[in-house]
Every structure is written in structure tokens, then in C-alpha cells.
Length: 343
Ligand SMILES: C=CC1=C(C)c2cc3[nH]c(cc4nc(cc5[nH]c(cc1n2)c(C)c5CCC(=O)O)C(CCC(=O)O)=C4C)c(C)c3C=C
Ligand SMILES: [Fe+2]
Ligand SMILES: [Fe+2]
Image 1: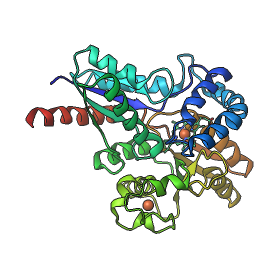
Image 2 (image 1 turned 60 degrees about the vertical axis):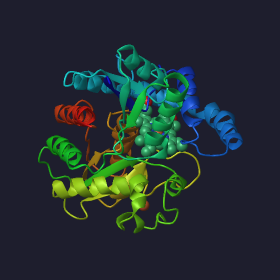
Image 3 (image 1 turned 120 degrees about the vertical axis):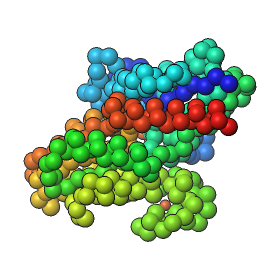
């Protein structure tokens, strides 16, 4: 069988203009794994409220971070794909879950190169319904409808793989450059608490009560909160951060439901109020820098910190196309191909 790789990231609008942002948000937020309300309620919320208010503000935010070559998330994902391609003989394609660079086009690109066995690689270290799951479900639907002879295997969340933690920690250490920040904040994209309960395969473990995520359970294979807390714990251990000098928070909440807490903006505000003068932020839910890291954290977060009296605010870039990260991805995909050949 001829093998190929499909890297999949979230996606971005075609341009930072409100009409393109509206189209993109419409597709994204109508996904039942992103806004998981019954279809009528979701339609009323998304088409009746969000799409009438949010695109203008989101477009303004996108304009602040947009690059000449396009959306940072897309450009950085393309750089990653090109570098991984140089380290494997299999074709490596790139797709986005939402927007113009569809998973269908990505699969077609591989099929056109003679591929009949695909490794689907969601570019998310932690599992979430709104990320990993929606990608695998979409790819399977497309396979059934358009590519019935294609074999697709998916890469599960890799949040606790020792080689990933090593590469992530090395990149963080390089960017912190030996400087002692008073506080290091690990900020992850949030999800509604309901998503955590829905993904609990035991249907009883995840209570979001402060202790469930630290108590061993098979629920953790699909618990986004557990997986975020583990990344923080493992990186902090590797980099020997002192207890109390680092913490975890969740950003980018939308709507009125309770999302995972503590919220990043309030945490930055509190740290500033408590007299912390220097802080660094790490965003390990994102493999590529994007609106949420470049605008919400690096711009808005910094503004909040400074308003509260903080002085030195540093954001650590995502792994993007870091050479060690590229080499690790290439090792994983090449090992997969090797294991198939041996089987
Ligand atoms: C109910 C809404 C949302 C859920 C759940 C959600 C989960 C989730 N998202 C990411 C990664 C990214 N999200 C990005 C942007 C973004 N996310 C939401 C909403 C939800 N995300 C919105 C409305 C937006 C658009 C921007 C805005 O209007 O604020 C991005 C950036 C995309 C870019 O083009 O740069 C990323 C990346 C994860 C990892 C996640 C769950 C774990
Ligand atoms: Fe999001
Ligand atoms: Fe949990």
C-alpha cells in the first residue's frame, strides 16, 4: 500500500474582511462539536446572534495580526508541512478543518499521488471534541462518501509523550533564555465544562471538582482538562519551575455557559494586582501561533498586565516550524510507515 500523511489544523478565514470572517465563523460555530446545542438552538444562537455581532470585532482582531502572506496560522502550518516533507519520502499534505483548505482537498491531493493509506494527524496535543474529534469524524464521513477505498488511521492526542514534552520544554527554555520570571502562566484554549462531561467515557469520573483530573482514570484518554494539566505538570517538572511560580488557565471563552477555569484574562489581572512585575505566557494547546496567541494573549493580555501595574510580559511562541518539532513529527510519521511495512 502507498502511504501518505495529512496534517490538519483548525483553519482561518480567507481574509480579515468581515464577510470572510463571517463565512468562516458560520462554518466553525455551526459544527455540533464546537457549539454542541440541538440544531435549532445552535442555529438561533449562531445565525441569529453571533454572526450578527461577532464578525466585525473578530475581523478587526484578525487585521491586527494578519501577515502579508496570509493568516499566521495557515502560513505557519504550511512552513511546518514543507519542512516535514523534506524529512520523509511519503507525500505530506496539509488541510484545515474549517475554511477553504478542506480535508476533502487534502485527501484528494494524496489520492492523486497514488496514496491509499493515510495517517491523519490532527495538530492538537490535547484531545477535545471541538478539535481532534471533529477532524476524525469529518475525515471518516468524507472517506465513506468520496474515498471508499482509502484507509485512514488517526493520530491520538500526544500531550504526554516524553519526546513531545522534551521538544516543548526545550523550545520554552530557549525562549525564556535563563530569565527568572516571577510567574509563568500556561494558558490553554478553553472549552465549555459540558464538553468535558460529554467526553467522559466512564460517565461518572469528570466532576471538574479540582481532584478528578489528578485521580487516575480511563476518562483521561479523552479529558481535555486532565491533558492540559498534565502538560503543565510535565513541562514544569522538566524545567524545574518552582511551586507557586507557575499556574494553568484557560482563554477564549465564548457565550454564557461556564467554561474551564480559571480564566486567563482574570488570572493576568489578578497577578498584576498582586504585584507580580514580570510574567511569561506559554500556550501549549496551539501548535501554531494564531489569533488566540498573537492578539488575545500577546496584545490584550499584555495590555491587562500593564494596566494592573505589571512591567515585563513575554509570550513564548508556539512550536510552529521549530526544527526539533519538525524532526519529531517526521520521526513519528516515519515510524508509523515502518510499523505498517513490518505488520
Ligand atoms: C464554542 C466555541 C469554541 C470552542 C469550543 C473552541 C475550542 C477550541 N478552539 C481551539 C483553537 C482555536 N480557536 C480559534 C479561534 C476561535 N475559537 C472560537 C470558538 C471556540 N473554540 C472562535 C469564535 C474563534 C474565532 C476567533 C474569534 O472570533 O474570537 C483559533 C484561531 C484561528 C485563527 O484563524 O487564527 C484557534 C487555533 C482549540 C484548541 C479548542 C479546544 C480545545
Ligand atoms: Fe477556538
Ligand atoms: Fe478530568
